[in-house]
Length: 140
Length: 149
Image (cartoon, helix red, strand yellow):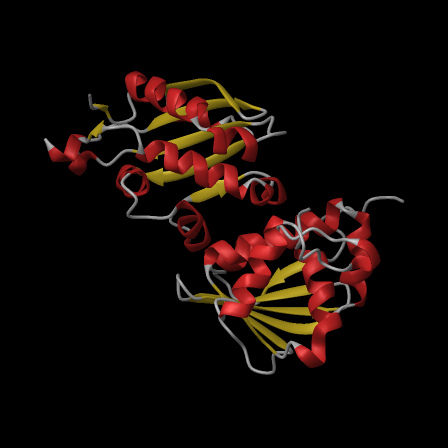
């Protein structure tokens, strides 16, 4: 059943997908930093307020994924910021996250060597987002 | 060995030729700066390397030129003339190149999974390196500076 985009239900489903992924588990071995995703508001797409997704990831496991204000996500060790429609492109496989970062479509803050070292893990995490059925506010 | 610190009163290790560096230029420059600042073993290569290295990412149609000037790097948006080596490949392979392990004698490791993947792309033409044969030592030095492993 589809869940509302970037809602608490979405966060829970996403966490489950991450924890089901054996690829993520092996690729993210040794990861010990928090990751924040900032989803910037796009009122014309019926996404009126920015949201922050805080991911507590540790050694191949998603310990917690929560949705709250953008400011919470901005405090994480790594922060990836993009408007709502860009994140939708990532979650629907229209935009590859690695290419998006190289093109500046997804803005990354954090230690670059660490994130590059875990490229496979971040790619698998992106795959996990595509497996969550989502109800997009601009498609109602 | 003391780690090199980048401070405002020192010259920057990495500078950008363009007033608005592209996202790719900022990412590569930032990656190299962080690598050299935090990994003393990369300093020797960075301090001695003099070469102009182009990198073109085929699936985003963007590239940069890395001008290594013996202890300083200037990053240009796009490919500039007079390059020593030019690497042309897709975004995924750029990430794999930066994940190549460095083995004995400072040589990139091509026998583990990532190394084999890079070598296969080279053989299949999905990774093209212009100027490779006369500049193999330069390529190895660039790989060591670029590698996050």
